[in-house]
Image (cartoon, helix red, strand yellow):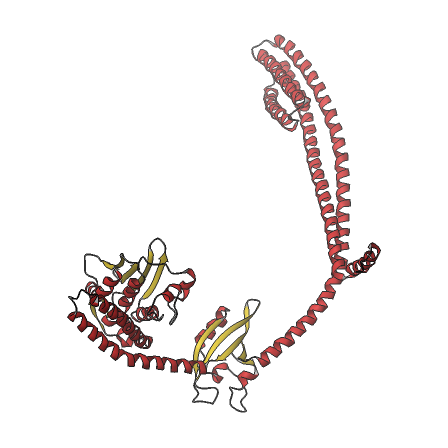
Length: 585
């Protein structure tokens, strides 16, 4: 077998590397990396030098203030000595007042000089010693002034001489400090100039590096802009092709709901020779949900409207089409410029669903009578074999339980269509809920006996009354209790808790069986759908909870549930104490 030599490998690698470095993407990547490193280095250096320049500038300002303070101290002390001499020799009171002001100013400048001086090192002790000399200087002048006030001008002369000596000592100290500070000031000015120059150089370098980065980037960006524009043109062409050949109807409306454009699928709905462009969509399709579409444009948010019945398109009438409609507002600067409407014709699906529902109702109706008859026969046999000890009684109970499941399923299927129609089917009357719950629980005695489950009803001391439909309530609560018994473990308790306030009645039905899976919670009230637990139980169809929801809504209330390992599963029904206004219609 032929094996490439190292020389052959080098020959193969070199063209690949050349192609790599010649590509614009590689050039851009390398340029960006190099420019980034240069810019980062220049920026860090510029920041470093500018920080040093700023710090040096602050030190220069501090030195200038310190020099000014030292000069002020020497000037004030000279004036204090002159004012003291004037008062002692002439007794001039204005000289004494000015001396007092100078004394206060001297104390302030001494503190200022100590604050601006170094906190450590020889200057710290130097300024502390300077402060002591200044205090001794003030004390000598104060004693001389006191002797003059006491009528002893001759005694003041030695103190004046001492003050003069102290002032000369302070002057020498101040001259040393002044010379030292001016030397530091020169050094700082030289450092500041150096740092400022370096900062300028770094900023110029930074500008050059950025320019080096921008030039190739601009060239490559221009190339990509051209490619992007071509891609956008292709995308627009593809979008037009999709719209023209999409299997759904598409309308584009202006913000005032005039038709801007339509696709061929929607054009097939129009009468022959009719034109839709420029017309109001309400003239063309008066049965479109005006309020929902207007709110879509106002809010600037998409919306979906399922199952819209269309019987008229322009002057074509007598139709029976069902459309699922989706509306998307097209925004420009947060303002709706146009509205896209997608129309899916679901007429065949709707008609098929209706036929399926009619078939289900017919089958359920035909099954109801024989199931009721067999139930009566089982009850008669239970009475006949009530004293039997050979297991026939328990067998009949199980047979009755299974027959009751089938009868309940048939009744549920018949009731679904009824409760879809609304409140006008209700027969409202005053109901004492306590008695109704008692009657419902009695019907489950045999089932509780078979399942070894007990029912505990918790209710307030005062009777709970509400205005509702008795049969609807029986169906609702009965379904919930039946489900609770079905999913309860043996020797457990189903708890029914009743609560009320001035407006609502609350019914909680709790069982301690397996909890509802998290993925099943959102679909629990979906018709003909069973979760993981429901699929494991026999006799379920997935319409019981859906029917409970329909009944609760028809009665003007709501139904919710909670399910967790600690407290089990609880279904909560909230109903109004009195009927709604439209419930009596």
